[in-house]
Image (tube, rainbow, N blue to C red; front, side, top):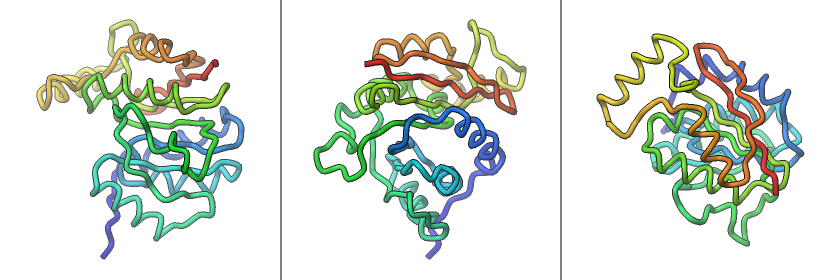
Length: 207
């Protein structure tokens, strides 16, 4: 049975994201992807980032199953089996003594913090601050407000739609995200503009 899921946004954004990542890579090691969703990013990025292992993760079992399906369909030697990971947990699987692929030099997440309550973002920042080595990097892709203002009318409309689905969902202001990151030793390096009114927010761990 083919367990793969497909997300149109992944097909559209994976090229620009990969290019931006390749220009800003951390030291060789393991990239931990938080909330890998379907797994399409993982199988696209890993073959192009040969000096890094790619560690996908998800919290929901159906999404974990999709990642397994994509890994079976498009294997790569640096793709690791996905982990079940809750971003809000006080201990992530990659922190356990028996984790097979340390060190974690990069953390990547796409399109999660606006479709999750704010504590999920806080948990991800805390976890990234714990698991990243010194000078390791965190990359967050998605839409953001800047100075409390949406960067496009379509984002404002999307924000209203999100809040209609769940009042705890929202496009986050980048200043709030930067502040939360700083409390966990993550220094903001860049808000890199991406297509479709998105950004790649880039942080670096400073021990």
